[in-house]
Length: 101
Image (cartoon, rainbow, N blue to C red):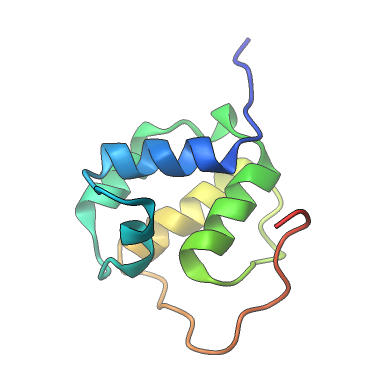
């Protein structure tokens, strides 16, 4: 049985490493589509991190929350879609951050 992690910083570090980004903040400002990030996201099994962890990463990368995303797979898929260019970057002000942010 795989152990799930609650560490958003661990997930961000892993994502940055697999995407060949020198800094975590680079992930926030990449133009979409961005195939290296899509490839990195697909390499990270959603089940290895909790849903709140994925939601926190989604908030860090996009600046908004998506309340309808209630499981790890859906959060990861949203990020894949975003970095594939299928979801436009949100221009309006951010929503309430996830708990503990």
